Length: 216
Image 1 (cartoon, helix red, strand yellow):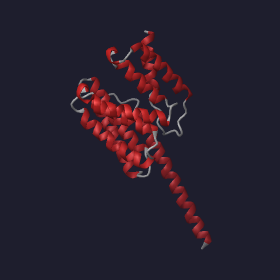
Image 2 (cartoon, helix red, strand yellow):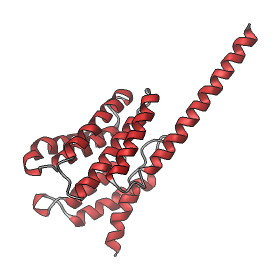
Image 3 (tube, rainbow, N blue to C red):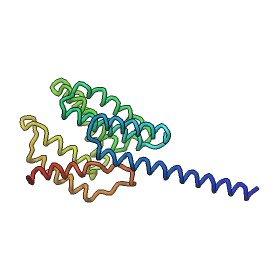
Image 4 (cartoon, helix red, strand yellow):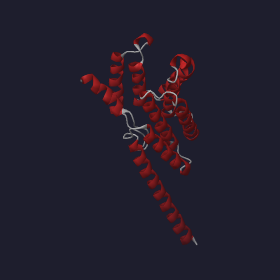
């Protein structure tokens, strides 16, 4: 009987290890695609993929986190092309994914708060003069929480640099100061190590891109 139970336990452990390896492989493949998607449609497909992974791996916070990240990246592309009216729906979907991620990861996850900031910024861009005091304030609040939780996080430094770089000077922005902040962000990226191979590690290429513009 003991021999049978031991064999069963070993078989169960092997299946669990295989499932975990399969999850990590699929997640790694999908995460890599966040760096190569070029269109809103591609990011939407990727968000759907992460959502399906999350429905199977319901105890893990990273699938809904990356689904939200994909939605936000979709929204940022839409914003750059002038498609502002669809940003509300995109930000709303991102927030739904982030609520799931936060339920699993807890309230003290800086990465989730940073994406909440980015989603609120997308909403604000639909009508900045009208929404600055609401969505703009929410974005500032979430960024402050993220920075308090993880001040060495390079993605927080990156988003702060973007905000300063793209804000008009009459409202406190500065391209010169923004470039200095991109340098600080890159230094943080060079010193940063994610907790696991699947944990958030995006943003370094963006910091390098902005700094490369200065060199031209």
